[in-house]
Structures are given as C-alpha cells and as structure tokens.
Image (cartoon, rainbow over all chains, first blue to last red; front, side, top):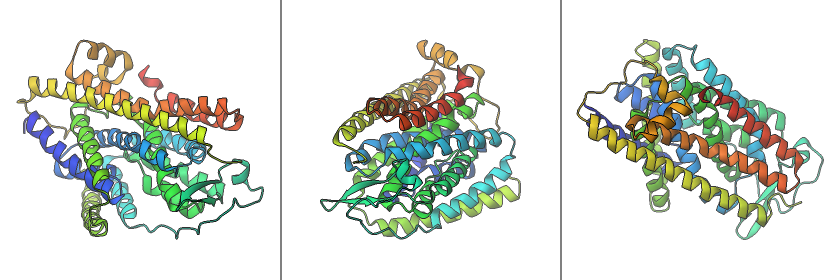
Amino acid sequence: MNAAEFSALVFAGSLGAGFLGSLTGLGGGIIIVPLLTLVFGVDMRYAMGASLISVIATSSGAASAYVREGYSNVRIGLFLEMATASGALMGAAAAMHVPTSALAVIFGITLLWSAFGASAADPACQSELPAGDSLGAWLRLNGSFPSNGAACFYEARRVPLGFALMTAAGALSGLLGIGSGAAKVLAMDRAMGLPFKVSTTTSNFMIGVTAAASAGVYLVRGYISPGLAMPVMLGVLAGALAGSKFLLRARVSILRQVFRSVLLVLAAEMIWNGLSKRI
Amino acid sequence: MAPTSDNDNDLELGVSRLLHAGVALAAACMLTGGILYLARQGREPVTYSKFHSVPLALTSLAGIWHGARHLDPAALMQFGVLVMIATPVLRVAFAIVAFFLERDWLYTGISAVVLLLLLWSLRGTF
C-alpha cells in the first residue's frame, strides 16, 4: 500500500470510530488501537501513540459544550488529576518494559470491561447541599448542576477510594494509550457516588490532561509517528464533531448495541492475537 | 458557598474557547503537513508493522520547531501533535490563575502539582 492509500483508509476508519464513539458515548479512542493493529497491521506502540493524540483531540474539542451546560466540576477534576497524572506517568514508563503481546491481552480485557461494565444507579436529585464535614466537603468537591430549572446538589463520598481508583485509571491510560474514560467514570459514580452527568463530563475534562501526561513520555520514546497520527487525529476529530451534531436524531440504543458487538469482536481478537503472540 | 459562580463559568467558557482554537490550530498544522507529505511521498510504500522509534529530530521541541520552520512535512505534522498536547497543559495553567485570583490557595496548589506532573512528563522533549 502506498502512503496516500494508507492515509485515506486510516482516515476513513478513524472517522467511523470517532463518529460512533461520540454518538454512543463509549468514546472513539478505545477502538483506534484494535483498528490499527488488527486491520492495518500497525505495531502496537505506533497505534498507542496515534490513539493517545486523538484522545486529547476529542477531550479538548468537546470541552466548551460541557462547560456551557454546567455539569463538569473543575475542582473534582483537578484534585483527582493528581492521581491520574501520576498513574499515567507510571503506566507510560511501564509500557516500555511490557511485551506488546501482553499489552494486547490487557487491552482486550479493558475493552470488554468498558463496553459492558454497568454503571451505578444515578443518585436522586437533592435540593440542598448535604451538611457535614467530610473530606469531600473540606476539599470543596461538593457541587451542584442545573436540572429542569432547579439546582441538584451532590456530595463526594469515599474520596480516598476514588483517588486510588483514579491512580489505576491513569496507569491504564499510560500503559495502553487510551483515555480510560470508563475507569474514570467508574471511580466517580460507583466509588464516590457522584451523579452520572457530573462524572461523565468531569471525566471528559480529565481524559485530555491524563493523556497529555502520557503523551510526553510517548513522544520522547518515538511512539508518535506523524504520518500515522495525522489521518487518525483528523479522522477521529471530524467523526466526533459529526457525531455530536447527530446526537439527538439517531436511535442511540440500537447504535450502542451495534457498537458494543463490534467492541466485543475486537476485544476477542486482541486477546487471541496477544495470547498467540501475533501482536 | 456556591461551588461554581457565574464568574467561574465565564472564565471556564473563555478557556474552553481557547482550547477550541488550540485544537483548530493543531488540526490546521496536521492538515498542511499532511498535504505536503502526501504530495511529496504519497506514492511511496509505507508500513508501520515494525517498530523503530521515529527519527530523533521528531522527538524534541527544538528538532520539531526547526523542521516545521523549514516546512518539513513530518515536522509540521508533529508540530500539530505538540500543539494538541499543549491544549490540556494550558487548561491546567489557566486553572492555576483562576484559583489564584479567587484566593483559593488549596486549589492553586493542587493545580500547580498537576501542572508540574505534566511538565515533568514532557521534560525529555526540552
């Protein structure tokens, strides 16, 4: 394949990934690595480098929409980012020493779990800020978001557990070149009991910062190949942009099922190829 | 205390517009570099199946900047990558300023720790 054909095909694939990822809310980044390694035969490390850059692109690109709606909590994001950024630095440092076949197996398992892991039930809307002098209150992590014209207040519980889980989420991000949004949402909604809207939008804010922490390490190590990052990043960005415009019109539940089946197949392929040392 | 005042939101909105501009700039560099790259080397065979770290000049700020100024396609695209990496870093830097202006010392400190971690990860490129 020559460079023009290769770039065009990778662009088209990334466009689809970005589109479906944004439409279903499952994130486009996680599908980029299997797409590049399984379909285009790209080395795992180059694939992780290109994926990581596209993760930053979607996070920064979507920021203004979320801020306007008033859901994301910057304090929670930055507080937990101390955990994820350190985790990412450790994960990225470890990635160098882990064989790519093992990375592929870990990737497959993460893929399975982010496609099918259930989230906690959304806590009920509280009309006033919960009192108390918990660690979350002291760190001013409690907040509110608008819902039907009224403010819903929430409090952050089990802060140390959330912090620990976030370190793991960061390590996963650095190890695999993904945003690990699913792990971040898990830490926020399951462990800390935050409302779903707050955890997903705050996670979007955090994903870009975490990925930037790994990106520096990847760049120095030569994982980021510009000829590959170019079609991937432009494709994912264009796809995510189109996906956000179609959000209300499409039948999301059907799409999510389709996307999940695709992720299931890719996860199985990643694990199989990793176990048989073909990656 | 209200966790996010209107002022807060205005600043955040301004920052997120800046981020948008950063993403647009990164995409423009990528696109320009990409067009030059495909115009010059579009017909050459390409493969990424074997990993051998990218040329050293594409892994440091000085090398990328030097190449981008001379319109080297790969360096231009990599410059786009750098701009993209810089957007979340800038976002954290602005958060430090915002918390400082609010006299929220705890979060000025927390944001500064995050910024230091990010700069630490980029130290190899300086």
